[in-house]
Length: 202
Image (cartoon, rainbow, N blue to C red; front, side, top):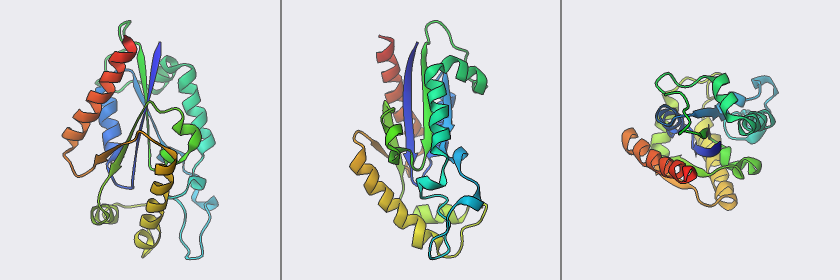
């Protein structure tokens, strides 16, 4: 049994979740672990001097220990983890010839957590321009909702800070243009992942 860990990171509303789910649909024996599932309760997330919550820009707002524990569970027994999560309905079940298990780890700060970085075999980062990111975020409903000025005064500056930190920590990230058609992005990443699966199969 062989394993492959794929990281799909990116800025808020950059398309990382869409790409990750599409990869999951295409790649046999795959599971997704999404960073958004590990947010701490809003009541325990600190507020800065401007009254802004650190929900979407700081690792401190996430239960990273729990996330890493779930990833370790997959690494110990990916076949059992897959059965527990349940395969995507359109996927075929594992066969003797398909014993490469793939974990897709998706999130906005996955490349800023050093212990997680050490696990990735393939790393992708979705990026879009400031104007597009702001427009997309303003069209979504968040709980709690973004306060006035949150994007310009906090989300975007912290994205730039986190990206600089990420680039100083990680090499080998493939940067993807989130403005390209979804089908084109999916095809490119699938091709890369399938090549790695083929290599692992020997």
